Each structure stands twice: as structure tokens, then as C-alpha cells.
Length: 280
Ligand code: AMP
Image (cartoon, rainbow, N blue to C red; front, side):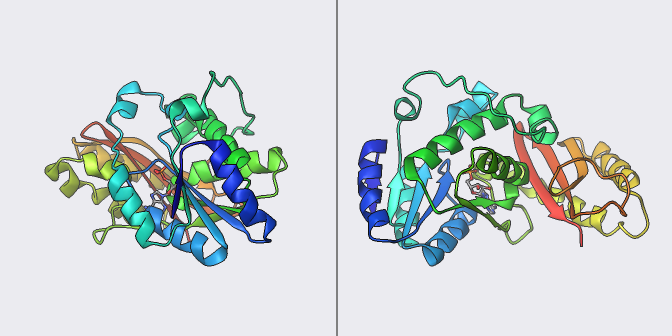
């Protein structure tokens, strides 16, 4: 496993992989790796001759400086996990390497950045678009792997890839959960033991809501979820929305065309947790 800190060294190494006709699979991460990240890497290793994992806590996607400061970091453990899962290349740049000067690029995300996480975290998706486009430029992958855990991010990444006419296959990967249903997230490590015990309520509330699909409109289900959270003081519901899986626009009638999913964000002990569940 090769580890690079600069774009130049990385592209030099990857150009030989590319010239020998192989495919490159990229897994962008912010480190503090868990099995969710590893599932993306396993897929990248299976489908490409060269797998690249980036570890970079991207400052431009944090709208809250305290969240950036407290973001968990475990580089030694990360490298061990990547080695054991067969990663070929790890890219760990400094902030200065990725942002030698301030990046003022504004991306048009076709409105995908205006709802849910985008509405609650102004500038977040523009920061995501900045770093993803920089990583795509540096690695020039054939495929890039993203988790459905961050469903809105996946939609934004697909959109900018199309808009920048990049020939990169964006591969969505299913959500990996703890045994009690909590979606794996680097932020889970920051939960206190008592908050960690409450956290599985989030996935349960998504499942309970989905079971009402035959009896209620999307709007009624949303109200029921809001009621369920109103009696749980520790779990602050930021949003629960039933949306179209392409446009991310709110669904008001089950007969509307297209796949549908419920997206949720909850604050628990000052930590923002997100999850989602597709409707059958
Ligand atoms: P992050 O390090 O949180 O930016 O995540 C890096 C990538 O891993 C993103 O594409 C995430 O959607 C994906 N990811 C994070 N958690 C999970 C999970 N529990 N299951 C599947 N993918 C995940």
C-alpha cells in the first residue's frame, strides 16, 4: 500500500497504473474509518485494478467550526484498516495541498443543495463539490464510490459529475448499520454512552414510519414522526422528509412517479446524525 501526501506524487504513481490499461477506483473519505467506509473500499478493490482511498477532513464543507475542530481523527488505525482490506493507494493531503489559495468556486447544483442538509448547513454542499472535484482532478478515477448513507451528497456528486462532463462512474453503496440498526458514522464515536443507547431510535423511527405507507399520505407520516420526536427531549428532530430519490423534492402523493425515500437528521448530545430509508 502506497501513501502519498501530494497531488504530484499521486498522479505520477497513478499514470503508470493508467498507462498499463488498468482501471482506478476512488473512495473519498474524511477518515475515522469504520465498516461503512470499508464496504466502499471492498467494492473498489473488486471492481478496479487500482483502488485509491483519500483521507481528508475538508474544511470548506464544515459550516460549524466547532464541528470541524471536534471531527474524530485516527490516522494510524485508518491505515491499518485500509491495509487489511487491500487498498492500493492512500492519499492524505494537507489542507494547504488541497487549498493553496482560497477556493471561491460556486457550483450550480440544480437546487439539490437547497433542501434538508443544504438548508440546515449553508455552504456545506458547495464545499463537498469543491473537494470532490479537486479529488476527481487529482486521481482521474474510472469509478468513484459513495455511500447512500449521505444520500443528498450522492445526488449532488452525480449532478456535478454530469455538469462537469466527467467520464466517471459514480457507484452508490448501501448503508452499513450497527447490529442495533444505527447507521455507522464517524460521528457515532463522539456520542456519550447514554446518547449511544438512545441513537437506535432514529432508524426505528424510519422503519415505523415506513410501515404506515399503506394507510397514510406522506404529509401525515411526517406529522406522526414529528409527534414521536416531540416526546423525546434528548433527540431533536431537524427534519424528516419523504422525497423523490432523483430530484430530492418533497413527495406529497404516493402516486407521484419515481422512487421515494425518507431522509432524517437528528441532533443528539450536540452531534448531528443523519439516516435514510427507501420506500418499497
Ligand atoms: P465520510 O468519511 O463520512 O465523509 O464518508 C466517506 C464515504 O463513506 C461517503 O461516501 C459516505 O457516504 C460513506 N459512508 C459513511 N458511512 C457509511 C455507512 N454507514 N454505510 C455506507 N457508506 C457510508
